[in-house]
Image 1 (spheres, helix red, strand yellow):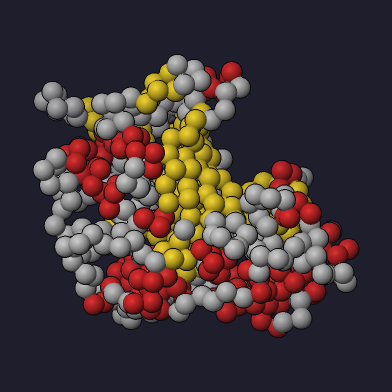
Image 2 (cartoon, helix red, strand yellow; image 1 turned 120 degrees about the horizontal axis):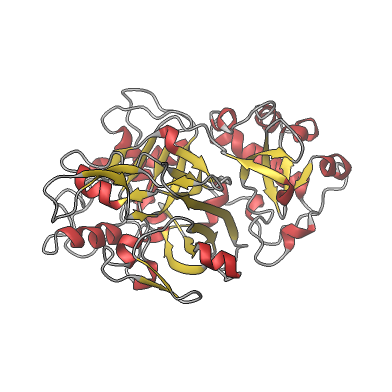
Length: 441
């Protein structure tokens, strides 16, 4: 399935919610990201859509909708504390809902403005909740730049293992480790063993790291025993969020052989509260990064011509750090990196196809992480492991004269994303921000 541009993407479209029309707004009418929120002073969660600096209750719009499919989609949000029921309806229902919401929020809308105003809430006066009840969590390793950088620290002469360019490598994570932006991340305990130690010790992790990633949410499920072809994969993709895959590098280095990540990853995974729908990203789809000459072509079950031409998304992601001392002195966050998902070696459809190639089924609410998104340049490294060369070259914090090899207690890590393309209105992804707490006593 290939998403097509339609009237909801028109660059000339404007909203009667004036804040959506401001240059550089994260949530112009061309975006319409989804979230789950609790109004100030309320006890009930609502499914909403972002517009400018406001969030609109979707269920309240159902009576105003003329399209039966869109109305049914809006009704699926009634009394819902996650987006899962809406996600399960599939891309046609979401597309119909998006079209109706675009019409209702358009500057041309005159009839229903009063009713819509009553369903609007300022974003800074609501509590943004975890948007999706995660059914399963799989984290990929799709950036060849990250794989090479990380591999070089441990295998200088052969950083990439032989399978990397043939298979989208991944591991199974813990669905119940996923939490929303704003939730603190407690430093984990684990077994640590330095090279000069004869035996490991059980202690708080000292090499805590972030990883810049995207979360891909599955909407329509697939059937057990029926692999999803690359050409059909986007029909199962509901949308995307920013994702921070927290990593305890010292726990990881001791435990990962021979079965891969476990406790070094399962303590926390953070997602942004905003889900950017697959349809909203249609203008920003582009060709998958070209493979270097001499690299093998994907095996037939992972190769589709249309996917190679349109299978990735041009989204730039900034990672920012504010230490506790920076916040105390009012210093602005320091940018750590700026990377782009368009550099990934494997496409999102290839990840879906590989995930199901053995007959495994996708469930509504499955989360597929992209893996750390790093680029080829020094300013596009998506983890401290890469930025500090495994801790050997500490990062200088200019505002407070501090240094960081890895994260310390009180550090705040924030991701921001934006899609841009000439001739279209750019859209933002909100932010994913979390603060590191000390390990439990």
